Image (cartoon, helix red, strand yellow):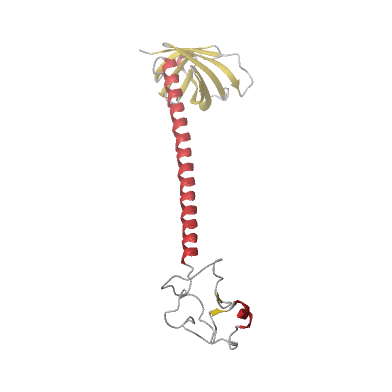
Length: 229
């Protein structure tokens, strides 16, 4: 005898034999009228709906407690694959998140160390008032540094009788150990004042600056300032 499922049902696994109590999956289509589930091997091709051939329905025909087979094992496999895929995706997401956090943490540590080195290299807090001389047209220079973490402030150039020539802003653009690069831009005063990039070094209470660039093309001036006590 051979199990003869209708075309609408899935084919049973090779060598499948029903276990006691098994029933066809409720989600399968109903058995066609007159369909024979168990036939002799040589009569399977003649068993069709409405044409049972020489065989008649027996206790093995669906209807009652006839045993059948189920797709539950296949569904279990699909469920296992779905769980594996979800766990793999979650692991990938967690791994990428950890990688991004580790890179961010490493960069932050490097930045913090760099800031510590830069601050230590300056040896003193540069914020405050600095006064001194300018090799150009100014007789006196006063620099007010308001922030030392990223150097910023304002510098005033004075001529004869303490007349203000111009006031310019200072903004740090980069720092390399104890060398600071600052952009100077005119805020008020004479048109002769130019936009400048200074290369600054601080040694103790002395600040020196050399022009690295100037909007007029002149780079031959310098500053020598001392911090007021």
